[in-house]
Length: 157
Image (cartoon, rainbow, N blue to C red; front, side, top):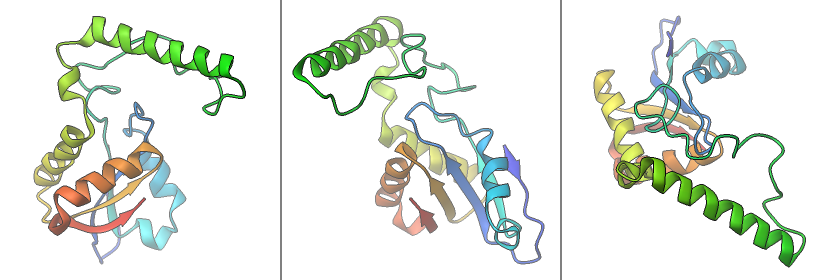
């Protein structure tokens, strides 16, 4: 998805990622463009995308339906029993993912997703990208910048 720049000054594409992992960024372009100061947003083509395995990408992984629905367990368990429940829950998710998507799981990693960012950059005809990532999107942006420092203009993590 794209929210095009409207200002005479063009700063290039601004790719946005909501993190998750597992969050699709297709609807995020409009959100970010409206959340930025108007004079700033007007200078960028704000680009939303669905990372591999997410949203409208193919295949879209859904390892264990309902796993990420609210309310999820606390990430820092209050007791050994709660920790064991969380670990069992994570193991069930991993098993379900392996059973349903084992053939593509080796390709569902952060380095591959960062390489996809570079495919998007090339498709946009940009020498460098700007990037704005939340949550896991911060890690994805950092990995992209590590792999391709010469292709990053501005980076917000």
